[in-house]
Amino acid sequence: MREADVAVVGAGAAGLSLAHRLSGHVPGRRTPSVILLDAPPGPLRPPDRTWCFWESGHDRFEAAVSATWRTLRVRPPVGPPVTGDITPLRYKMIRSPDFEALVGEDLRLSPNVRRLEATVETVEDVHEGAQVAFRTADGRSDVLCARWVFDSRPLGSLPAARTTLLQHFHGWFVRTDRPVFDAGTAELMDFRTPQPDDGLSFGYVLPTGPHEALVEYTEFSPRVLTAQGYETAVRHYAEDVLRLGDLDVLSTETGVIPMTDGRIPTQAGQSVFRIGAAGGATRPATGYTFAGLQRQTRSVAAALRRGQHPAPPPAHPARSRAMDAVLLRALDSGRVDGPALFSRVFAGLPMNRVLRFLDGHTRLTEDLSIGLHTPAWPMLRSALELPGLPRRPFEHP
Image (cartoon, rainbow, N blue to C red):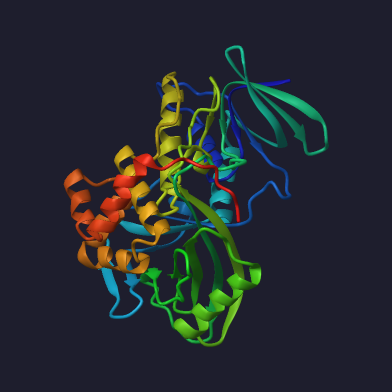
């Protein structure tokens, strides 16, 4: 049996971020003992992925940021693009191998954080704490007793919801023969892609140099595509829309992010909490998660060091979640044209205000100004019908 003050289950962005915030000594604060349980290589470990977020200034993971942009562009299906300077914000990209390397080196030197490669089998409350049953990489069973457990593993099923869409995407990291990219501008949403019957689609381009970029195809819709469907969509976007010419595909990424108004609780027991996407850190209307999980883990780490109850706070304000529920319903019902709505919002408002809204950092008056740039009747009808809609379990198509 092993013991620690804190057990962190899962070494993705949320688990690594919390362990990193708890590592080392802070004068005048508690230094809890921490064990980070990381799944062994195999299907339980997520593939390499990319996280994006925006902020002003620098944060503790700045050394892992591979590229930043202060200019963003949104392209409607037809007509001129909308380009905006988001100063003082910066749009940032972190690739998971760089993040894991940075945090991993710091944890290796930490006197109070230990990493353990193991497959977690159960997590349950016990008297004045919780117990984690796991199996080590060599097949031995063991138990970890901790005062607090923070579980970042993906949920086994989504919560019942009035609306659930999937944000699913497939991207290529490419190198082109010609210098075709503007490294100072990221294409946030390019709606010149063929639109699906249900939902919406857009292209997404994060250039890291004149010849290099992440080129991605994304859908908000009820069902995912086949592997061939994603390849066809990205190829069409790269060749027929962007006209990139000859290129090499250096690597790929694929993902599915639920966009749901279901209630995702952070508490799973008296001493067990969920963090990251499993704890509601994903913004329902956008799929962005990294900034939300940083707010969660920052709050949890501060509470633990003060000796206070460390329940993770909601990653997004209640008003933001309510507005997201209306938008998801309006999109899912087909009452609004998604590309037209997003294009109109970005065209009519300062782009940094829209980003602050998407991060839940705007005042009520600013939220209302954004609402004025959406189609009034479809949004109002969606808002009025939400209270009467049942919450149903999500069934994967």
